Every structure is written in C-alpha cells, then in structure tokens.
Image (cartoon, rainbow, N blue to C red; front, side):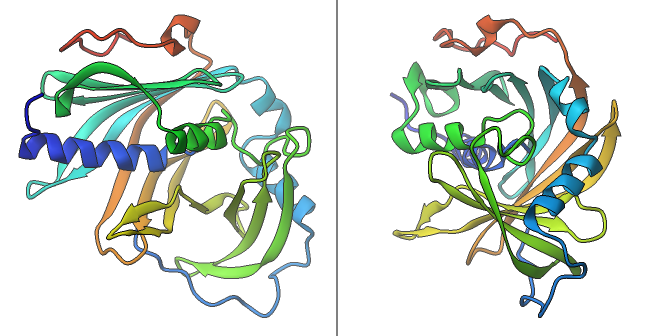
Length: 273
C-alpha cells in the first residue's frame, strides 16, 4: 500500500470531521449557566416547541428520504474544501460520498452494519466500520434526529438548565437514548431550534477530547427548517471545521442498493444525481 501523500492526509482529516458532523448535520463560545430559564418550561414542552419550529411532527413523519450536497473544510495551507453528498433513508440508512481529485470516499450504514471505502489513503478495498464508528452511526442515523418522536424511539429528555451559546440563551437538554448513550443538545430559547449538539469524542494527544457541533443559518426547505452551516470544534484545539450545505432535496427517490456494501472499484466517481 502506498504511503499517503500530504493531500491524502488532508482528506483523511476531513473524513473524520465528516464522521463528527453526520449527526444528522467552532470554537466554543458557551458561557456559564444562568440562574433560571428564560421561560419556565419543562423538557417535554421545549422539545414540543423545537419540533414545531422545525416544521412540525406530521411534516417530519412524511419525510422518507433526504439528500444533501455541499462542501466541507479539509484544512491544509490552502484551506481546501471538498464536495460531499449525504443521503438518508428511513428507517436508519445513511450514505456519504466525499470527493477529492479523481477519488471518491464512500461511507455506508444500512441500519445495522457499516462499510467504508477510502481510496485517498491507498485503501481501495471495502472495510467494515470499527466498533466505535458503528456505535456512532447507530447513535446518529435517525433521519429526523433524536428529538422528533423521542418518546416513541425510547429516548428520555431532561432539562439541565440554561447556558449561553454564541451570546444567546439556550436550554441545555440531556438526551438519554434507548441504548443508554447520552448526548447534550442546546435549544435556542427564542427560536427553539438546535444551536449546539455534542459530537462524537475524538482521541487526540493520547486522550479523548469532547467535540461540539454548532448549527447555524437555518433555511426553510419544503416547510422543514434545515441548518445550512455546521461547525465542529474539538476541545483544546483552535482550528474548527465547517460543513456548508448547498442544496437539500426532500423525499428524492433513493434505491435501497445505495445503502448496501459498496463495491471496491478504484477511482469510481460518485453516482449521478
């Protein structure tokens, strides 16, 4: 296997940040917790307002597939941005394609198993997800996120207080998944849209470091509010990585074959849209 070039190293780093961002879709600017909530709401009431602000429960239940295209930071001296395609299909299927030069990296999760193809580091064979990647994919694969229909999904939500996120008050919610995994979600106290979520921790310098994902620039797509900018920050590191959404398609036709184990075909371009 050939040694990865500097360019390949950039893409490999970008692929990690994509894994961190694929929760659905900066430097921490969070302040100290306030003494009380801006409004005296329960966790259930906050979630209800959040779902309503994002388009409503019935609108999200009608969504069976979604497709996103855009660009994401890959770092490097030239501040490289790489195009990507993210496709999601109920119940818990996800496909990601990350393009660089003449190569396309592919990551697929079918709801139970995951595979990755990383030609940019010389690995042109399909590899299974690591246990950590599989756990992360299972945690993040809901098309509509963990708060929509959270009770039916077996999730539990608690209100832990209010904190400043980018100079705005936000409710800090503790989400406990059916599996027992825990994630914190910050919901803006005025718009009731998510403004920050916990990402998957990353091992750096020999220890696990918390990862935060900031969500901004919400736009209306077929009645659904979608964040077009996501910024990921690793605690203790200055550099952040942004993902910029350029287009969103609701309920496109996505064949189940897209979410099966990919073929090890070197240099194969992303499938056409």
